[in-house]
Length: 416
Image 1: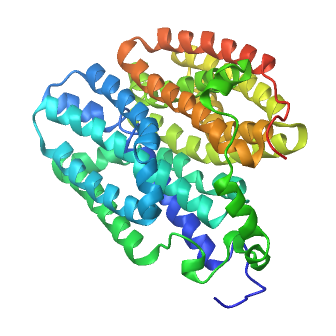
Image 2 (image 1 turned 90 degrees about the vertical axis):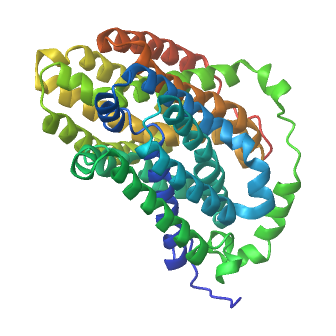
């Protein structure tokens, strides 16, 4: 590998990996948890299935994506992100074809669950593992860029899936999505490298990393964190941060998974609802950036408190949506902006409290709680056919989350 002193963490090869991981996050978010507003209602109507059952199972699939972090952790260590991602994408593509053509409800539900579990392979273990390999000390700032792929679901997937399925049919529509996954799998095998060294680059794009950073990375890999589950379970802040942020994620996902049918039930037309989704996706990008600046200025805990106040206002607007389109816009803009910020605020809080040496040990527990509540949020759309009642429950839990965040402790306790 040549010593390229001009190498940067955002050089051409690094940008390629960032673009790729953003696509991976977009795929995982879209086909796992992104179907409730669009795909499931069409399948339910055409196949005569109960939409509430589909929404509940979709929520379980989102939980399985979090569990997939643990299920596939050994595979990513043994085979590397590249092989795990390619194989799991190809299997997911096959399941999507079955998902599209089957008329058996039990088989359809099984496909939803398996597709959710596989997201823990290519998205959570693969995408995150690839990021850690390429940017061992700068993965926070990189994830702030690549997780835009999560928000793009609201712009490129939700508004257009009904048009696609309406044009070519349910089976062939999902087959087209499956073909996209196959193309990404081929991209993975041909163009993606597990490590920057394989691509003739340096971790963090920094030539000096080869001198001292590599030793630090080795020490971090061998480091045994004292923050085992038994230790974290005794710390009240583990539960305050995990449940507090989890309540926020649950509320956000319950809105995102129900917004379009809810607005249509209130008398608004489909183009209006999807326009709010598209604009909301842009607001999510802006929200992520703005809350990141606030985080940098005043700290994560205070930023989280401001975040909760904003999202509570957004959910008050959801209760007023029947009273005029202005409240739909206000709810959409605020909540989508909050979605963009949330996926960065929690990792930032964990890093603030535990540091990069103990981050993985702490996030494995807190992040799992966080992901489980996301699935519960999607499931709520099946348990609460009346969206107003669901949004009231969201508001109560958001107030509880705000109180939890106020009483959480952000004092650094990790290794310096």
